[in-house]
Length: 218
Image 1 (spheres, rainbow, N blue to C red):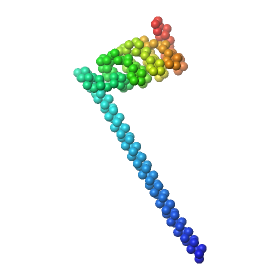
Image 2 (cartoon, rainbow, N blue to C red):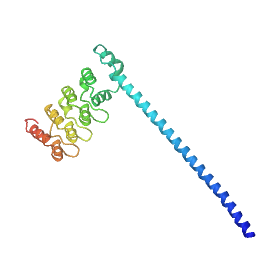
Image 3 (cartoon, rainbow, N blue to C red):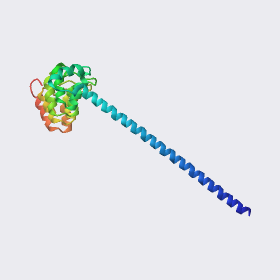
Image 4 (cartoon, rainbow, N blue to C red):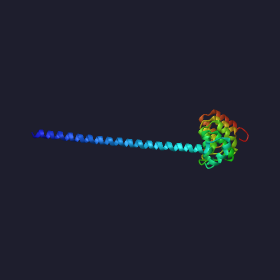
């Protein structure tokens, strides 16, 4: 009889603990679900904030530099919106966007600044070559630049010709050389554009660089 009582008590204890354990598991699962939902809401809020910020930034750039392009309002727009902007942001951003109208307006108003470097030591020409713009951008930019600016060096000693080779843009190498860019400049590591082109197997660039170096005064 005593044994039967003990067995019954053990069964009751087991059922009570099983229910308690199930309750704990359910509670933990509920908390985990709440935590995941909270994290999801926070992520969505952050994403929305980022989207709104980028939208506002884009609107600010458009309003500051590109909103109005009519010939009658060019001077007014320049004085009212472009001049307060850092000049390098304006020209370099126009180059990145391949916005020929904005570039033309800037270069006509401030041609002396075409070859100046931005805060990172890049001229608009360096930026154009690095991002891989269309030849039309260089054809607009190069005539406005002094010869020394065309061969200007970045902080690591590289010219636009170096950058064109490093990005495998052989057509841009030709345009730069036609604009009298110096072909034999060494960067901070002692390499010329010719060294780089040969190492990268850019046969067209190699021929153009060798031909330019053979010219008197190159």
